[in-house]
Length: 149
Image (cartoon, rainbow, N blue to C red):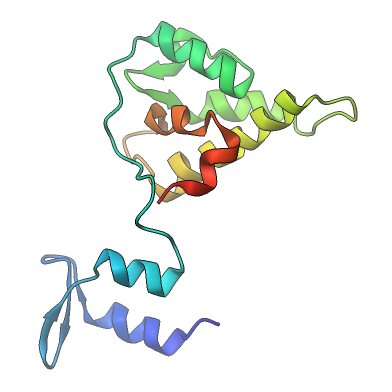
């Protein structure tokens, strides 16, 4: 159940300059324990960190082929980012899985949607219309995805 009045009160007290809430008793910030309690998200298991090794466009092409089932053109990359239009073009070409889809095809489609949600919405990269590819290798083992904080 969402308490909209509480959320509204917190939004009104948020100060983006200091990344804190301003209350009568003083300033307060959100801790990882608060996130765990408020959102019921685990914060003490595998963490999503930006410690990816440096990869070439060829490396990213291979990773996209293996995990998403398609190889973007080299011009669709910008260092370690991929054009949103390339990802969308691939999905518009195959909007649904066929009845004869293999488990690998199902996993690739699931990775696509999870990658889009993580890189396109949750951790959006606001430089142009690119998605950061650093999140894609974390989706390799579909069964382990639920263990990330």
